[in-house]
Image (tube, rainbow, N blue to C red):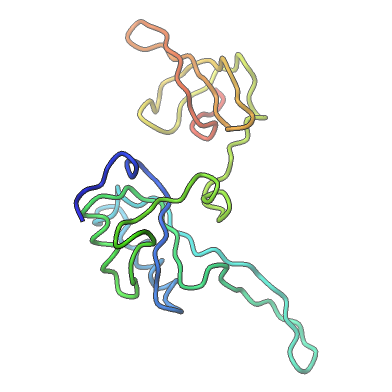
Length: 180
C-alpha cells in the first residue's frame, strides 16, 4: 500500500465492503479495536452501519418494526488512514476491502459524509459574535478566545485566540467550541 498522501491525511470517512450479513460483526470488531490500549485507539474515531426502521405487516395483519440496513454489505469508518490502520481494518474477518480504485481507499466527500449521517453540520445559531468560548477539540484544546466571525453555511466560526502574547484568528468548526 504505502503511498498515502495529503488527500488522505487526517480523519476522514471511508467505506468498507463486507460479506453480506457481516456488517455488524465487522463494526463490533472495529469498535473493540478502538478501545484504550488497543491497536486502533488513535486511528479510528467512529464506525457506522446506517439503518432505517420500517413497519411491516405479516400475513395475520400484525405490525412489527424491522430494522433494515441502508447500505447492505457496507460499513462506514471515520479514521486516519495509514499503512497500519489500512492493514488492520482490511484483514478483519468479514471485510472484503475498502471502496476505491484497486485497493486504494477513497475518502467520502463532506456532502457524502453528511448524507450517511456521519457528520452533522454544527449549529452556529447557539453562538454570536463577541461570545467568549473555549476550544474543546483539535490542537488548541483548552485555549479560550472570542468569536469574530460566523459562517452559517459551513458551520465554521473564527475565534481570536491569544497565544504567546499575540492574538491570532483561528477558523474552527462550531462543534470544536463551547461557550464559557
